[in-house]
Length: 161
Length: 234
Image 1 (tube, rainbow over the protein chains, first blue to last red):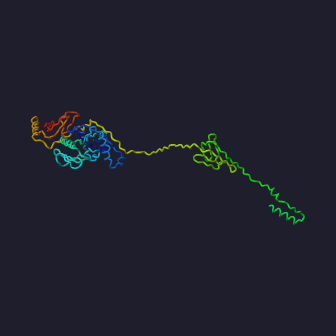
Image 2: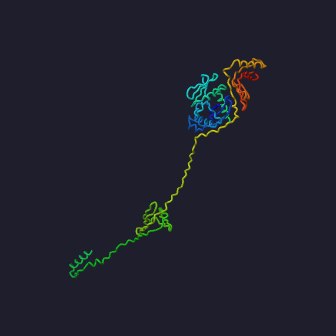
């Protein structure tokens, strides 16, 4: 299982979601946080650090602590959230690369599958088992596709508030 | 004074000549002088009082000495001075200039009690907390968006297998072949969990069932005016 963690600012409301999928992209667990609207005073005091603080400390870490399936690796589309835990990795598409798994640096990998290439970046190294699991998922679905589901789900949550 | 009297008598004797001069022992006069000794109307009391002094309170008006047996309330203006330390009253000098009283009292054995009264300050300053409260976390499966799996068409395909699948589509289609449109080849479509499949911008969107069979397959998708035709590639 692979987790997808995303935190969004939708119309000034901060909310986050954790979607855990199996090797076919089927949801195994979904958790989301109630939207938070910072006060004016909080915006002033936290300044530029507000978004990072909310994303990592308040939302991401809370969601990870509440996870029941505890996936071995969590992928995120927000590079700041990598700081939330050692098993959180930022994923993005790369223009070019090689098929398979390639280690670039410590905690940094390139994964290529069927002509689509991804770049993974985190604070620690991944085991071969986890890397193969990611590669296997990339052969079934677009690795960034679950973020689209999370985005739509979080938009829905915010619209309901 | 005696000398002056003697000189006066001698002078009178010379002037009058008739006066008998009698030598007189003037020492008697000395005995006769009445010296009035000024008496100081003062009493001195040196009485030791063997009583416990419970409390001694000095105020601008009174010096109040409280013992187990009596309670002396002395007007302060009669008190010339007194000596008192934190534990006992040593002496009090009372009265006018003519009367002096000295009281010796036993040391106060009991310690002076100090009462503490807590003072609470009530302020009108509001304390604002900036701590962000951890958000509530929900896990609701009814949010349909997470159950819509979007699959992009594969860039790579095995031509023979795809053509074979397309041939089956063409054979089974009863309408005009010109109306058919090839959408693409899709890998690992979870057919066992599919509730509904639609095509959006040439992507395959699979509406997943909460439960189902673990069946997945590679498919070709062809769009006709009436429906979407999905043929499994074997």
